[in-house]
Amino acid sequence: VQLQASGGGLVQTGRFLRLSCAASGTISSIPIMGWFRQAPGKGRELAAIISNLGSIQYADSVKGRFTVSRDNNKKTVYLQMNSLKPEDTAVYYCYAVAATDAALPARPYWGQGTLVTVSS
Image 1 (cartoon, rainbow, N blue to C red):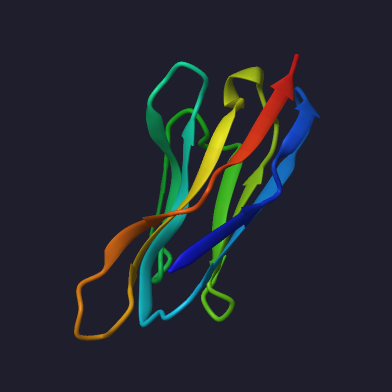
Image 2 (cartoon, helix red, strand yellow):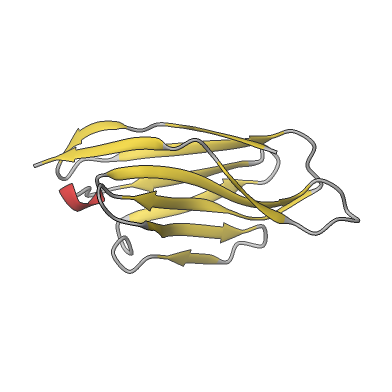
């Protein structure tokens, strides 16, 4: 399973960005897709995840500003980031829990990361 993320960049405080991540390869199911992020000098943390049934979890720091969604037919997850703050500056990693075969358990996969920089 390969995860290809896009949409990062440099924006000013208060602006918005939209990240996309498409899964490809031999895939039977993708129970969970979403995004983690890693700010400079800090550990990787959950930003937002969404299940294939639509259950969503957000980090407290992004609630009300970020919206995660997915298109199951396209095997793609999105992260709409509004009202961006300098503290949102991080490498954003696409994440998926996917199974390559119905007889096998799903396991986690990571994308390569896309940098989001928010200037003050």
